[in-house]
Length: 214
Figure 1 (cartoon, rainbow, N blue to C red):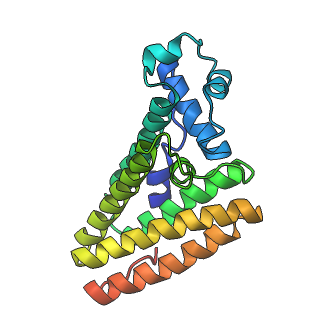
Figure 2 (figure 1 turned 90 degrees about the vertical axis):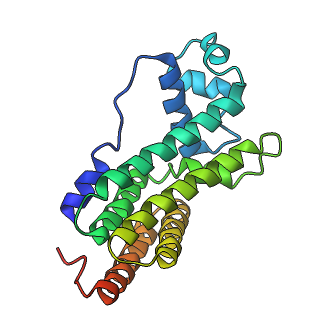
């Protein structure tokens, strides 16, 4: 479990880059986590990132919508990459334990203020920018595919792996919302335990090998 947590958590915080475009994307992601999509304005992004105002439409000619859309995609790719890297571990239960530990650590470190930037975009209507909801949906689909591929490599049938992957993501995201509301890590910890037991039992029944016991 410890090894998987290190694998999936070691890139938790990316180094600050000097490029104003990268700083704006990083700041947008952080603001989405804490304030939601509607409250993530250009002015807030500039104040948070320290980027010059003139750089906004130079780097993001589509304005705020493009900035938020790219930040959502970047955040999604980051987690997908961590899942795929951690998937090299021998035990998929270890990877899922680390997935829940990552989200628990993030929300606790933010004093229960920061959630998932993908959810922040997905739950808002965004009638003026429907592409944001599509981008959020695409991120969830990539996470599901990455987890389903992991489960398939360890013996689960494709359809069962896809369903279980969707359930893992839904459990983690729902627990994160509850953690923010309750100001407690307990919902994430409870979800992690139940998912651990379900996945370990399912894999053992399928492959005959005990899982998640390290």
